[in-house]
Image (cartoon, rainbow, N blue to C red; front, side, top):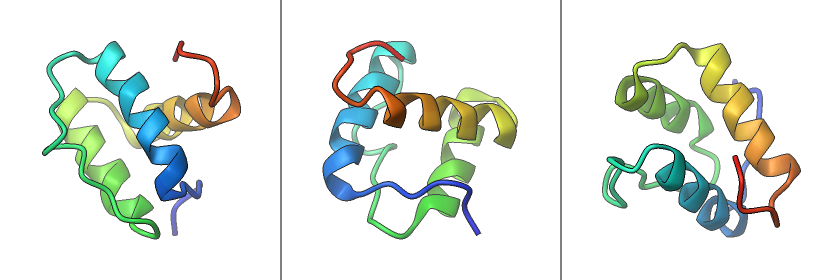
Length: 71
């Protein structure tokens, strides 16, 4: 079970933040459907070569300040 919950609306903003932080990530790599948080976290872990704790922390940080452009 994922430690976070991301709506499709929020994902659009979070994805932009991730792409700014990791400019090599593409839209195709960051495909997401609501309710698939575990697979999203696993995919991001692989893409950015970081552990689960870091990825979850980064996503939570992005969600807390959803209107802020910074990650």
